[in-house]
Length: 332
Image 1 (tube, helix red, strand yellow):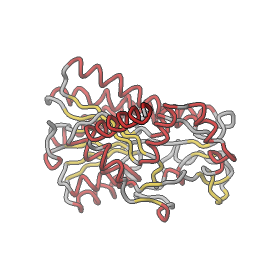
Image 2 (cartoon, one colour):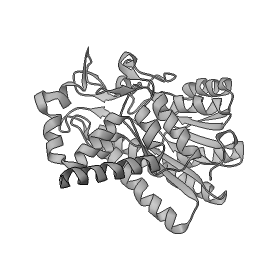
Image 3 (cartoon, one colour):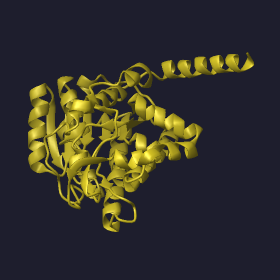
């Protein structure tokens, strides 16, 4: 079993805003040793202060996860600072909104380099250290949109789908080796982070999350749970789980449902005009913000995730009971 969080060294990429920063502060409250990675050196200084004020120990390492050498240096610095790595959280992510034919190739490539190859670089940097210390946990932040794509976010959806496949493959390899390394994929629903203000966009307006929306704390809670209690995957938000299940049962019908009255297109557009922008794809965005501008509509926690996703046996029991009930109904 993993160590208690107060005894762990945790590395987090994408740690100066949104889910990453929220998670880092939560780890600080638990007394963990936290290694923060992001592109903004100034943002990292502020994040380190927040973690230490919360009660943890922290160091910041400027890192672009698209650069394998920088990610390797991050892992080495973590071990130099705290002696070991117990949990590695691949949380850095960017997005580019627009129709696929309108998004420039270099922007698509950048999304893939950060959101998918950044995960690869993190895995390769972390695994030797996790193995050498007898195990640990690898946590990847994917998305519900990796399991069910939507229009206007093709590069992001493709990258997040790749993360799910990457982690599934890695999990089987490590289990075969009996490596003692747990692998968890987190699939958030719509989360009120600064991503929508930071994203590259070719929509003509600022992007917006599709309701229902959850606060970043709901994802941080799932990450902390996975760091102490190995679990295969966690969907954050009942709405995301419903969409994933619906897609598995009837993918074509889900395509049509998402397009009813153009909802999948209209609901991803805010009413705030914005010229075409690359956002934070190639340069760091504004650091230090844990939430975006959609808090009025956001749930602070996901009761569904707390009840079922954090406890897979409960989830399996519920599915089994539902199947038995359905069979009984069909027989009647």
